[in-house]
Image (cartoon, rainbow, N blue to C red; front, side):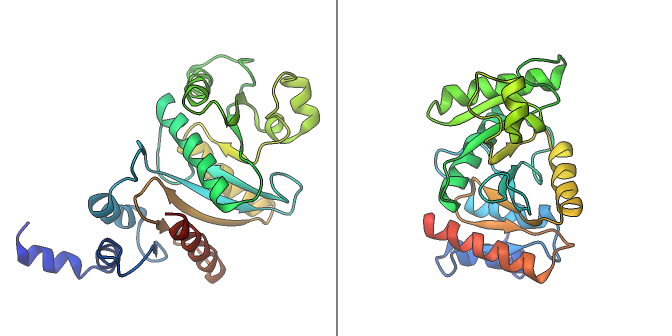
Length: 239
């Protein structure tokens, strides 16, 4: 890249903001209301790169629902905005990163459900087997976590269903983090909850970048922006 090209590129608002973080003039960045996810992420990955010890950048939504699930109706959904078809190892990394994020934002301990159309191997298929392998890997990497799978959504959230389908696990019925098997399931899932349950959806928030850089849906409201700014501020304090 020539100096002339660099001057031209840094005139872009997202590149300029990312350089402010790199130079220590800002602690975080929120974009996406009028920029694509790719335009938000590209400068962050090029300039800030991943956090030490992190293998994968992923995203999550904080879902505030009018229900009793999670921590007083609040749950974390991942990955609903970035990784299209994570393999088992990537899915395990998403689960571990999401648990760390939950601990930094919430007062409850993280309880992670690895979601599938199968519960504890009740159904076959590539997706269910991928989630089972991801669960095994995540338990190896972070044995201290309350994490289990594969779990159907009702088993993850409803204690009576969890007791019936997975009686030997402590996660079913207690999950506050839902890890989806791929982007299709995650993106559709959070939007269903947002629309049908009239939930507040804050994100997609990124995890795994060296400094906080967060994306917004281009359909976001002013309240959504304020919520993601608040999350970004907490991330900056924890960095």
